[in-house]
Length: 128
Image 1 (cartoon, one colour):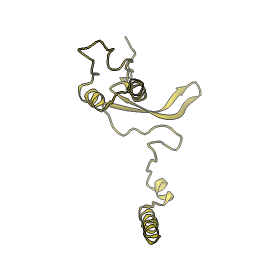
Image 2 (cartoon, one colour):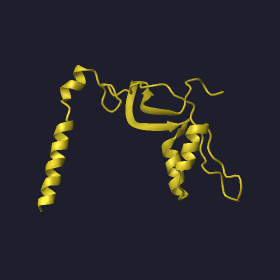
Image 3 (cartoon, helix red, strand yellow):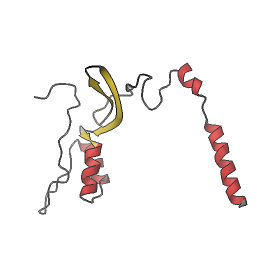
Image 4 (cartoon, helix red, strand yellow):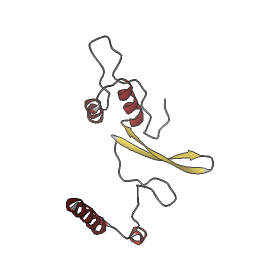
């Protein structure tokens, strides 16, 4: 029982030591969860590897949505669902995608391609 008390006490001490006053976020214009106060996303960098989408454009304006993560134009949800459906591990495939900008394909055997879905155009230019 005494050991549990020490763990809880240390846990509470750690929480207090790391707590940041909510007023400081506004004072220093620090974004929480990579969103502005109006729910739009915050630009944190430019890359061809990944993209986070935090809103949809509608006729009424920008509508916040649960964030979506894309690697090289592929929706990470699609990759994860395909891997789970086929009961495969995906670390190597996703790592290869991030480094080479293309997905691994099975070159031997009779199985289907490793992952079947289409990348999204992230360039901001119309598809041709």
